[in-house]
Amino acid sequence: NDIVVAGSFAFKKGYSWKFGATTKLIYEKIHDYSATGLAFDLGVKYSSDREYYNAGFMVQNLGMQMTALGNEKEKLPLTVSAGGSIKLRGLPLLLTSDLILPTDNNMALAVGGEYSQWKPFYFRAGWNTFGSNYQAANSGDKWAGLGLGFGFDFKEKMHKMAVIAAVSLL
Image (tube, rainbow, N blue to C red; front, side, top):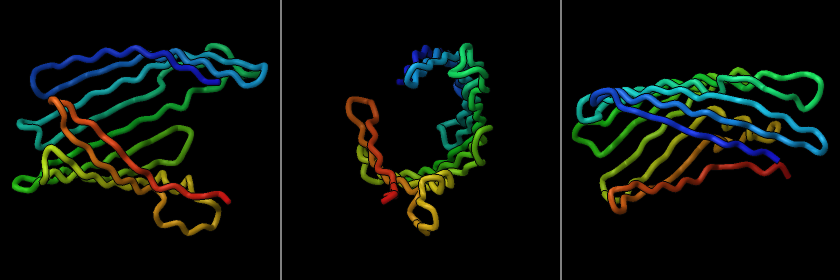
């Protein structure tokens, strides 16, 4: 059983800068063993005029394990991410990319796009290198990491849905 209780705070500095932080209290239980941890996520986002360009930076799981499952406390899986997006002028297309650097796994790259010609509907596609972690050994699955999705605006809010390609281990 895993439980995370989180609280977040965010604020804007002028038009272009946004800052956010989340505090997480983490509880994990496996059979008769349990562990607790305290973690913080910090992020910053810059948006240009008219939001044609965006850039963000985030650090996740800054913190510590307070009690251990066994005899040794482990480090939390720290992740540093940086990304950006660009709206192409004159085209209904948003292009995005992220670089993800986890301390407990390989570096990952994610790229994607959103097509908005038929507002209020949006269509999305993306791919990430982390998807190769979901491949069965020697599968040669070329679709691992692919994601497709759509969104729509309703009452000034965007609602999103995605489908991610998965592999069978059977």
